Image (cartoon, rainbow, N blue to C red):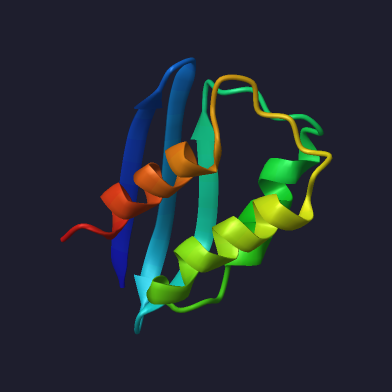
Length: 92
């Protein structure tokens, strides 16, 4: 099992994504940082959406999540910021 961590400093806040990789699958996904997301439970929902999926699917799942959830507000950070943090976690 490999522990992966990726961070990205967005305009207003740091986004940190960490998870364990088991046979190319993301487990124990945690998204933390000093960004603001409303509703607050949306961060947990995004973690759950990524959980248990192949690493190469994660970016597309993130796009899908933000496209479907038009009610989510993330002032000064956007889906691209989350994807950069994810890409940093996926770098060897």
